[in-house]
Length: 70
Image 1 (tube, rainbow, N blue to C red):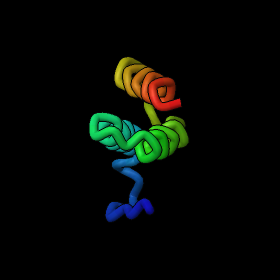
Image 2 (spheres, rainbow, N blue to C red):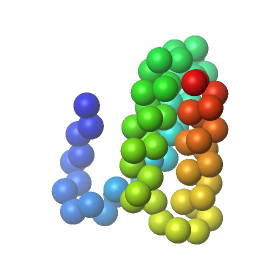
Image 3 (cartoon, helix red, strand yellow):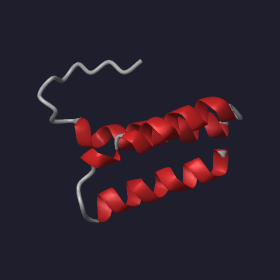
Image 4 (cartoon, rainbow, N blue to C red):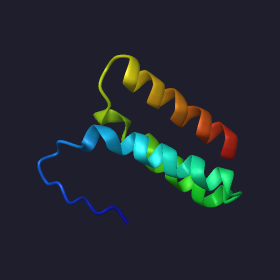
């Protein structure tokens, strides 16, 4: 399902936000199951998020998304 063209890991910190946004897009379209799947993928990638404001905002968004679709 996930295909990464960059092999050095330099973009790994952006995957949680990418999947969070994909989940939100599916929510907006009314696709709850797909939204839940993407929010869960995002949640599984939070270990790569940096400490600080950016990481905190993304983690919060993921938790809110999971609550909305659960």
